[in-house]
Image (cartoon, rainbow, N blue to C red):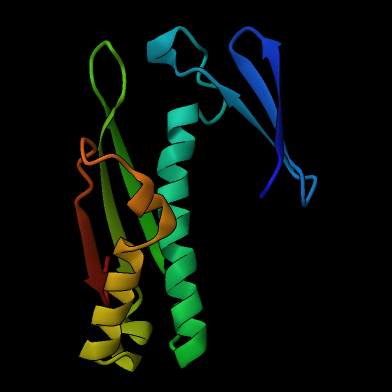
Length: 140
């Protein structure tokens, strides 16, 4: 279990502290939902969690198999619905550098892609959220 302490600071801002590390982050409501967009919104953090979770589980497998993934870039595009607001779609693109792609065979690539699509955040998302994922091996 991980504890996260959150304080609502007013004016649609929150301050969150990660218990184990003491690291903090701020959130703000987006401009299209009464905020100033000065930081990640809560749904931005969901999109961030998905991309970083995919990278992390791929990194674990890459470490186990000595696959080079340094320099991999992940882009997540979040789309919201009109009111009532919810995340409708998270488009994920993973760009794996050419030197990494050249060092990983087809089986390894398939294993990494499967691992990314089975990350804990992805598996926690409701089926109502469309999550198309594209892997670009050797390019962006």
